[in-house]
Image (tube, rainbow, N blue to C red; front, top):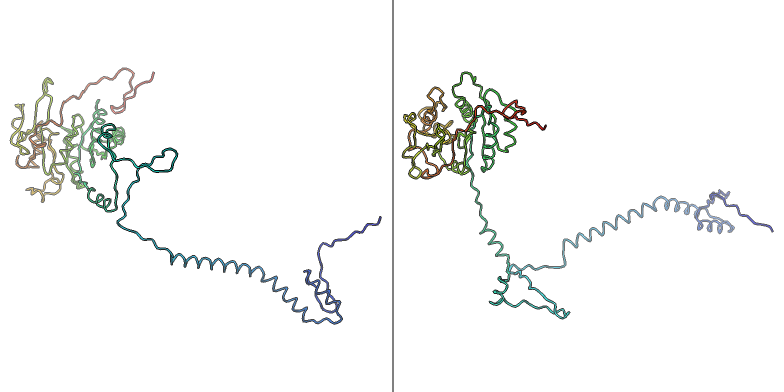
Length: 411
């Protein structure tokens, strides 16, 4: 049986005719060319028009569709913008609207009827023990409660400048940790100035950082071999620092071996110029406690407590931790009407036990410039116990390089 095969050409090739007519690849153009070829006479104008139209359609067909799409998007955006600028609806807001909570609804017998709670009576109150009152909230009530009940009770606190001299000894770490934890409980602002002799040890600096109290670590450069009382020079170093930087606050000398009440630091902030209070001290024999400090009538100092015959010649019978003063006295002599502008410092040339009175004489003239704290001076707020141990022997096997760095063996 004979088979007929049709050879498919890979592409349609345009052919040029002798009469100048150009064939186009589209079927419609093929039909036009076939019909024209069958005619007896062919005009060149239709062929030329067909050629120009085909070129224009191929070049501008896709670009025209892109322009139409962009034009429609802009038109829709403009119409939506106009609708948003001129809303067709209107919402009326009434300022007298009251918001009332809905009462509890109950479903009975699978019906959708809502039942309101009956008003509470005496029986329900006695059974349940409480009543439910309807809540009524309005915009006016909310505004009035917001502005009438809100109070701004912020009161600025005076800064406390606590000066502590320290040195390397057996209980140094214990004393500094104890005082640091007390100061941590005091409401800020509190500045703790810790003064060491000759050099600042890394162990002390690390201990101060761990307390979480704002501190300044100072060094007294005085040669320790020529010092009769190291605490005097350490406190003078802190006084120079306060005067140089014009620190404003209440200065208090707090030795690390004393015991302090939190109420003491609260009363310090009520001092305007110079304040003092009684201190409980352990007698040298350590078998009784003595009281040293002012006798007050209200906040007025009228006398002094003292039991030691050797110290009766002092002008003011006050312990070093039994007074505090305003720091501006150190660097603002005009405000406090000081007769001289000489720096106020503690003296190492006086006898032992007279450093306090000679220093206070530079701050105030007499008892009329003092404030008894707390009123009537009837409470003991700090204790000076003299419990320092000089010859402490650590257990055998402990590694001790410094008293602040004691290592316990694990074996």
